[in-house]
Amino acid sequence: MKLRNYKFYLRKAHRYLGVFIGIQFLFWTLGGLYFSWTNIDQIRSDDVRKENHTIDLGAGIGSPQTALEQFRLTDPTAQVLKLQVVEVLGEPFYEIAFHGSDGKVKTVLAAVSDGRLRAPISESEAIQIAKEGLKISPKVVSAAYLTPEMIGADHEYREKPMPAWAVTFEGDLTMYVSAETGQIGAIRNTRWRIFDFLWMLHTLDFKARDDINNYLLRAFSVLGIVTVGSGFALFFVSSRVFRRHRANRP
Image (cartoon, rainbow, N blue to C red):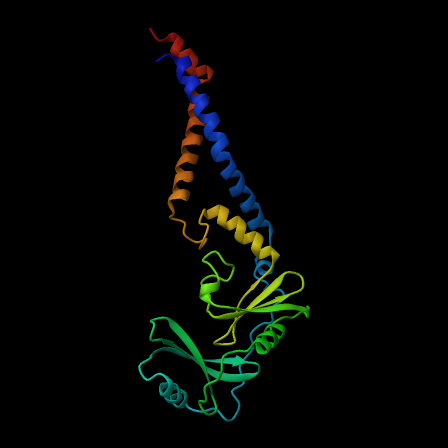
């Protein structure tokens, strides 16, 4: 094949690959700029979230065994996975994580004083927990009860303890409170949502966001290498040194 034909096909391949892959390169660059120029504490809302403090167990702390015994009365066959002390609205509780009869991990709260099991978090309690978890005092706009069936894998509260209360404040700030444990699972704001969208375009995982081994990302990575390689090849065959070498060949 003649040299000009090589150049023609290289230019054509590089041009169309550049347009196609260039869109994804633009997304990657915009994402990189946003990631590097934003404060991760503001994205996570750590700047408005109150820091955790030492839990005061008080003088009436009881044995964890008492709490486990109370729990066994409700579900004798449950397999306990973890027990820890947490605070809910100023009171200490044993948080008992276990495998339910359906195989899913569930959690209940038991008072540290007498092992009494606590009822799930109500809407008013979730709002109070959300308000007390912030350094600022925005107005509450709404509170919604979320179950796994109500949200998809691409939801902003994915892979977090469910069911949960979504307490939304003015300023597009949403705090998610576990209905079982009363703990704050996540805080989402506009900065986080922009971050999440750009990260989705970065990884090309449109659901969980964290699967960097998906085939779409692999395909674009390979096409990126091919595009760069075609550019180098085009530069080489168009250089004077290469043309002189071809001209001097017998």
